[in-house]
Length: 56
Image (cartoon, rainbow, N blue to C red; front, side):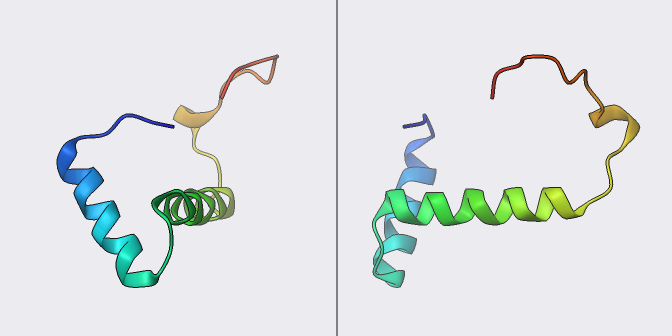
């Protein structure tokens, strides 16, 4: 669950209908693709944080 604007919600609903997916499944795919893309990029100095116990 996450919070978003009504406009984003409506866009996700239309997108998921076009692809024959649930909104939940669509969002999972979008997030998985974003994570994969981010992991392929080399880290920048501004994104380096301590690797202690953290939260997501």
